[in-house]
Length: 184
Picture: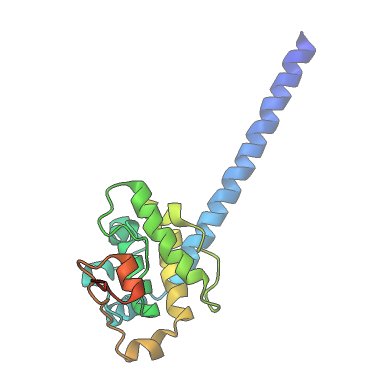
């Protein structure tokens, strides 16, 4: 019985030691991530986003203010940014997301388009759930990587304000075939 209690005490001490090591590693990783985030030039990134047509409220980026990233959580700002940079409309986007699943789908649609860009690092391109949760450790580096992949300053100086052609009343199949032709 005493041996079993001693083994149990030693086991729980080992578990506490492992948990302490994990906590230290997590804290060190968080500190390194915060250091990287603080190394981002957020005013410059915000200025670039404004230059490519992102609304002002979505360009007030802050590491310490998670509320500043709320406009990016539903994926619509990310979709609009990618559509502007790619100069095309992304299909399958929920333009009025009403659920977390819709938001995640929007983010994933934008990330699918970004993955096709050779210069785009894949580091954050499979992190849709983190974007939907509004995690600055994902959103801010992702935006910085997008800026780099699309040419940053040089691209922002050219007018990128692109507006998709309205297709109200035209179904997707009609737009793909060039419109509807009635046969009499």
